[in-house]
Length: 413
Image (tube, rainbow, N blue to C red; front, side):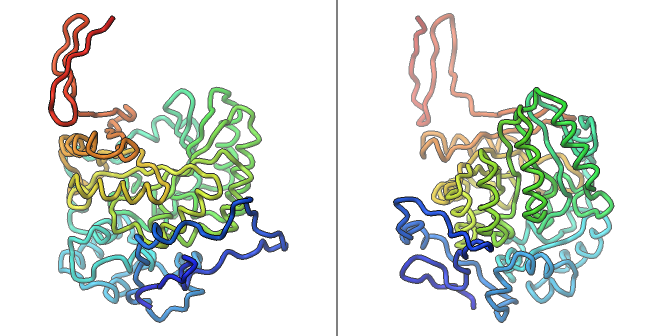
């Protein structure tokens, strides 16, 4: 079934309806819940993802995130059934495996153009020989996350927040991953003892008000495990908010089930940071996952990584950000590609990011303009980089230029 049609009520055919809770509890509704979520005119802008080599798979399996995880494309012979590999890709799949495994969910693999090696989904998912080239600036741990790790599983760099690693598994191993030193490596898995030590550290440090739950992808954990972790965090008086860092909305939107968002409701305020890199990733399935999270009260932000050949054109980024806003996802950051080993072929000049921001600022709504940052090597943290709108400054006189290049004078009191 290559295209999933829409019914008159705006529901996807083939996507299971929202069930009642297992214990018989009815789904919560608001006084204004009329069943139209959202209006069909918005949803129809997001085409269902294709099925490709999995066209004969029953809907019940295709929409089961556990099945998607089990059936990931991890071997060359599987990949050859999905796309027409180039000689470069075939060789890279074999030679890169020792350094960083390949793993692609059927859902995300089906988004790849089988005949185009420059397909943005393919570039993010399929190894290329560029990964085997180690540039002089490449670093094993480019952000010095291990250096700022007081206990295994916690990076504490900023005064009031920490990064909490809950797993090193992901449904898709992105080829531009900055943590490839441990992501996809089964020997680096976060054990229960590590989770408990991390929670104890957070509890013992009252300055921590914000916890970024990351990995890997924390949504690789079961609902029960996540519920336990979030519950423990919510019981710590000084923890005000936590953020789930996940790419499942992009690579495995089936993971965002009704039961999952029902669980999240117990732990508000919950923020979700996701990672869309290209408009092609904005499918009906991704839209539905974002809809469920937003309807459950989660605030969603997007963190795009600037990648050469994938999303380094200003108009493409504007298109992506407009789609994200329709999905109730706020464009939050554009990251300059890190100095991780084997990803130099993805890196653009910093000037490219500045040019993108200049193309957005004033030319579209401010909601669609994210922050462009360089996550500085050696643990320098996120540094914003912006176009310069100051023409001159002398005493109380400022000369500024606007988005159209016109200059204006501002006098301080």
